[in-house]
Length: 372
Image 1: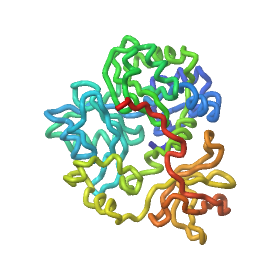
Image 2: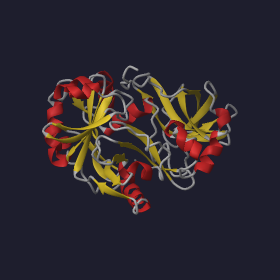
Image 3: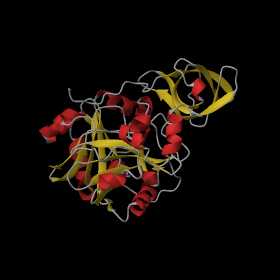
Image 4: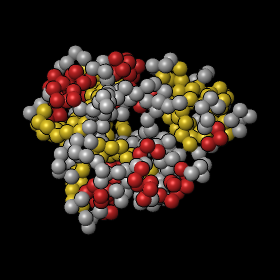
């Protein structure tokens, strides 16, 4: 996703955000809440309780056909033919050169094809690409009449189990279709904060009622885009359009987990030649995590230098970590400078600030994984 200056669209919850006093900003063409009571307070509430996010600007669709899972593999490097009912996977829409067009979630909550969720700023282009590329074998139906909520945090499971006990039994990256709040819902145990939680696809005309029903629980507060960004940064999760774009490969972006074993062996996905070469160490740059040890936060666009002061890369996301109490950042550097513990510098307002390459996630992810 990426910000835009022009607001043209509103989610079904726009009036609800304004009634709560949210500060609204343009984001990906939508009028979106950046904060309610403050980014720091909302960040901490999500880490400690349950935060409710409106992510209805994202794109939702169903892909159907004789074998939509096999068809989808023409565009992504994930193993979707092996995707079992009730499971979903994170994947990457790739161009012919192996560059990332978008990152997405796709799952099988039911027997009715593949349920796909893509980023807001990319959804029109993504859906047009998928529909055109697979037009002779699959049909893409946009679900523009649905809203999308995310409830995230250590108390999210207890909140959702109150509405349906079966939801507590879902594990991370599992999904289901069920009647919830009296309407047809697609629910996955997933999210983009590093915390346990759920994403809930609901009919748009029921969005405000369900939003208020969830906020009626004292453990739940509304959370804006500001805290969503600081949470995903602490979790080491890339934001498309900032930490990855069409020029970036999955290897450069440190997203190799999205390359399924079978697909690598078959070399049957877009850009496979480049990506497989990069996996065998022909790599020019790599996304890394940085602990910025002093001074102001290193924001997107700040230069990264080696110990001699030579500029070797750029920061793509950065800011204060409310959980850790110091500044963190992500950016791209040559592989030789990507080793953990490497001392680097970030240049902020003309000043060189000490930084160190550290492991991501910066803050441990707390997804709920079922016991083996």
